[in-house]
Length: 456
Image 1 (cartoon, one colour):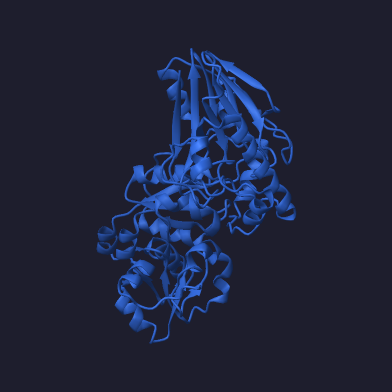
Image 2: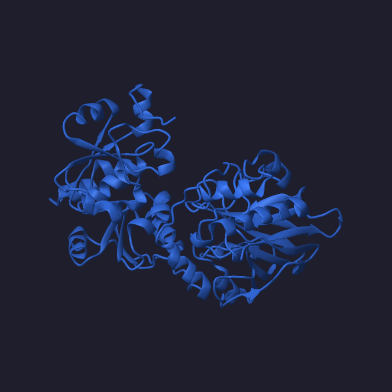
């Protein structure tokens, strides 16, 4: 009997392999499902059921793919926004028995209308559930966002409050197994750790501590969350069932001359190396998106229909990047360029750089007609920012770039410089030639005790 957590980096997604005897259930699988097959084989288990705790918005579900391979039934909660073609609808009280464990569904709408949680009972003990899979209803340190139904915002916030009360009543002593950890777009206040109990959350989670329904609703409807445009694609694919992920093929790297031709034909060049490598030297007209940031910002800056060329250190890095793209539906990746910028330069090919500047330099440049562009989230910007800065969230840059003059000079900043580099690279790729990156950004500015705006 065991529960194994599978963490997907970037997305901060948590899925689970639950086994007892020689039977197993998989909770909220990701698109690349080989890991579940490997665990089943290693432990000589048959996967009999797959359970989705809700309709995923931020990633492609692997449930229909895994189901087809192992002939397991997919279970999904009621009141979905449409028919989930590959799943059986289950309601409150539905049970699945595997070995010495019983899994029981409780309906917990709020984050989405079809959200469910799964109580876990050890049949040798009769004093309530030992665990609960909480999906996007309850996290460690936070609760689910409720902004997916803007015309019903108060109603769904109230539903989430009611669902949390149900969890308190039915599973107060239980270990929680959420569908996301810190870094997910599904919540802002998640703890770094991924273990907790319902009772601990009642005592320490600020939102679990709100005991008045009206107060909870008011708190939720005033939260600010970003909704990437690709979420609508995920919702559609997760209703009909997405195709299996195809492993990025080990084709030879394209040559730098081919890269130029591909760019002219409309391919998007994306450099997934660390920002330090990109800033030092990069292929002209390429965007910067380090691997760990792909799932957070690719869906904002690029379209699922774009044809992408990955620029990476080697094939393994390119393959890993392609996997991150595939998890959120970017399948148009057939080529990569294995970059060695010294060799590119030695062959006489053009390359580009972006200057990184420190706090002292920024302070001086602001007196010389440079514009400071802060690309942090609004929830980061409002509490503290530099007075002369303009705020454009990185995810909104593609939509708002037309409001920026290519003739102006821009310094991009964020919390440390990583998102700022992505923003500067995007601007440069779009023809904005006067761009610099404030490396260290707001942290470096504060370390110099330079003035900031902190609204009271």
